[in-house]
Image (cartoon, rainbow, N blue to C red; front, side):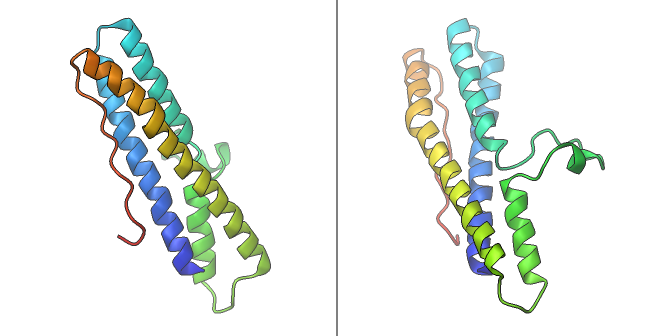
Length: 148
C-alpha cells in the first residue's frame, strides 16, 4: 500500500507541476497581450487551471501558523498524511485506511482526467487562437510516467 501511495503522491505532484507550468505561461501571456478578447480567454483558462490545482494543494497558504486552521488539507496533503501514518507503524493497513486510500485514488484520477481534458480541449482551443494571431502557444508538459 505504501508503494501505491508513493505512486499516488508522485501522480498528484505531477498534476500540480504541470498545472503550475501552464498557469505561469498564461499569467505571463496575460500581462503582455493587448487584445482584450484574447486576454479574456487566457485569463479564463488560467482560472480553470487554478480551480483544478486548488483541489490538490492549498494556494492561499501564507506560511503562518493559522493556515492549517483556515483551510482544510487538500488531496496532496491527505495522501502524504496517510502514507506517513502507514509508515510509522509495523501493522498492516486497517480497513479504514484502505477505504480512505481508495477514495483519495478516485479523487486523484478525477483531477488527472480534468487536467487531460483541459489540455486537450481548452489549451488546444486557446493555442489555435494564439497561432492565428502569431503568438507563441501555451505548452503544458507531458505527464510523467509512474515511477520515473
